[in-house]
Length: 477
Image (cartoon, rainbow, N blue to C red; front, side):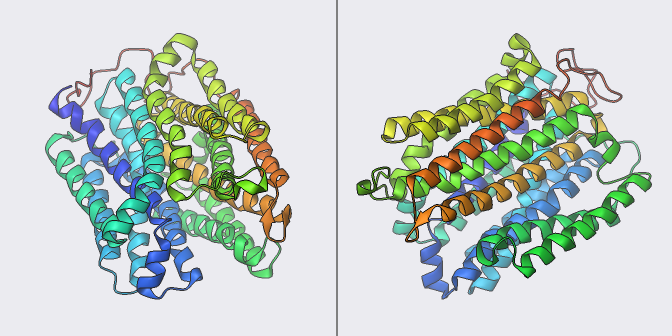
């Protein structure tokens, strides 16, 4: 692997891994934050809500900027902004400043669509597919690793160490990017649709805020319904604006194509299925053994039981490209969704011992990683080059919205089946079966995507040699 090749894939992947790990480590450390900053439970929730909303707003905007400008500069700017947010959170004297820092940090999620575009511009299709796989796989591994590292690090060094370690990791990723990531050509013409961005950001923020408030207010509370109504009233005019402007932030006509629409639907459904499970499984594992279904696990052991999901996703994701060339694109897309369905369905039937849980989450990790990686590869192959990052951004926002909705619905299913405030075994089984059903719907969405790679205007088939690049090719293999 050449030095430039290491940077093209290594810098954004390191950046993603560092911040994903930090966010996962922060959740178990919330009691320490509450004690140190005298924060209320409602304020603590805003640590994640603010980050979630800012990421939902910034991701499509960053994706469009990446389509229009030098992706190296956009990447470095994103690293600088996110790093500043993490540093602000590390030094926060009160909970308000910490929430503000995490809101700034949340823009890092925009690196995901940016990276899809960067790989497309600087690597051959086969190497870009490998890079997309590594990006998805490392994110999955970081999620699992964060659960294991949270307790030991925060107990020994305090919760501020989680932020400071992340600052160091972001600095290392930025340094690597500065020296190794090549510049990419600016797209011919175009501008940022700021009006569309404002409406989309506002609508998605209202929707996410409504979803995260469900656990406090309930689905039918007037405040919840008002937020959902405001989201609809904002996203409706946004769609009108996007259809009328010459250079939209999100090309809705392009998004309605079979590949973008199918991959976006898969993102929503896989996010829904995955996060519905993530809410339920830790609760079940932590339940006392005398319940007949719990394992009495503490935070460390919960992370250990779920760790195979991250490892499986990391191992399989870089192999999705070769699998696609061997089995065909649609087969791989269907396989990913089917494995999510099988993993969650299996957990509903067998969850009485650690090995059964670990086997189920391994299957699910394989499926989620295969499905998302294959979907991103399909977007990179079928969508015109000047829109690839923007469409990928929509996919990630869709996955985030699906995940938030799934988490709230999963919590509602658990609460509805609780006895004396404790979820019953059947309520956990119902949550897993719901996730399995959503995985089955994702199989249907995979059939919407064309089986063969389409050679669209400005795009290039994944199975064909890349056209002469505008920047030097990075030697990954």
